[in-house]
Amino acid sequence: MAFIGKTLPEFELEAYNPAKDEFTTVSSENLKGNWKVLIFYPADFTFVCPTELEDMQDNYEALKDLGAEVYSVSVDTHFVHKAWHDNSERISKLQYTMISDSNKELARELDILDDSGKALRATFVVDPDNIIQTVEINADGIGRKAAVNIDKIKAAKYVAEHPGEACPAKWQEEGDEVLTPGLDLVGKL
Image (cartoon, rainbow, N blue to C red):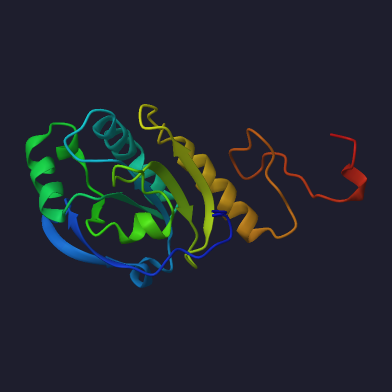
């Protein structure tokens, strides 16, 4: 499935909000209006997943400073998310919402459900209109580095605010060199 430029599927799912220690409902509709990072992972109480979610927590404030919210998503229930949060040193640090896709609806719609019925290790950067801007999908044994999402959000926001411009490789901050694609650049880069 081609993801980029597609609208996030409509959904309404139960979640655990560790910052408020409460269960809540998260929908595609209430995600609108903000940049967001959706970090899908195979399962709670596993091995690579807690390292990734802790790393995302370590970068959460920087993402919030950019106006982005973070949501982790697995096929575990919101009750299991709470139990994991209460029993794992790494996961107990989380302040972002943990969405339950226990009916596998969202993972199936995004075509990231593996043969065993778990979500693939996938990260989506989604704009305020719920349009998917970036996707990263890794094999189960390959963990992701959360800090790359800071650069992805910065670049996606820059491009959204500056139509006709593009961010080249290694672009990190407004003020860095950008490209204005056109005939004058053909063969010159």
